[in-house]
Image 1 (tube, helix red, strand yellow):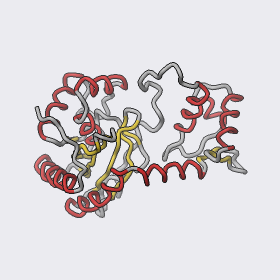
Image 2 (tube, one colour):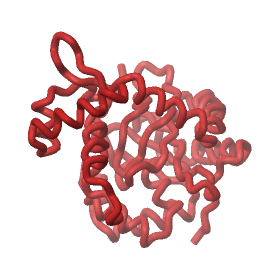
Image 3 (cartoon, helix red, strand yellow):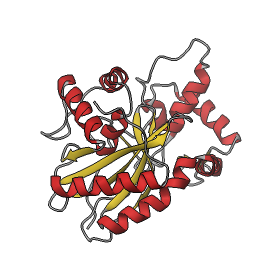
Image 4 (cartoon, one colour):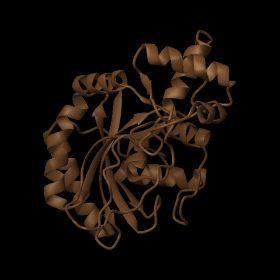
Length: 273
């Protein structure tokens, strides 16, 4: 059966970096509204959306009507609930076609899935979280899900820690502390001192290891990938039950992932320290 995982971060965070003064408030509200839709919350009533965003119902209604006009959301005839519209899918497809790392990573994911027999994912840095954009699921009966389209914290996941290692320590620290070091298991990084030690360890080895830090019974190895020239930072992970992914096995998977990423020109250069 599938490993049961819940999305801990599924909306655009309100505590993102401070915006410039030219930000348009109504546009931000509309984008926050769109950010409420996720795999686990694909349908919303007007009242629930207004309550979630702390908006007057009239304001939420006007925003939805505007988004409807662009086919970004649609309203169901019977339930009157709102869902994302086809235009949202169109934008996602355009992003996928124009994103070189996504195209380059797909054969790498398939190769690593064959070698490891585990679930392999690609995540990118988005709004100071990991956004899963591609995955190949394991054929094992007990395995982790692909979770495409979900968001995960940086400090508690293999991919997140790999992405942090590609950033300067000061930037990584600021990014994580802005969101808080929430402990999801007894093994989660929960202090800045732990974060710094893990950053140095990951940067030195070239890969991260999540030993049940996000979910009990699940382990994950991650490597940073991307294109520094385009400003794209992401990570590839191999995840599965901890009974199968032990530290020694994780190191083997990491070496295989690094070799495959380099062969596809996906390797993100790290200054080992």
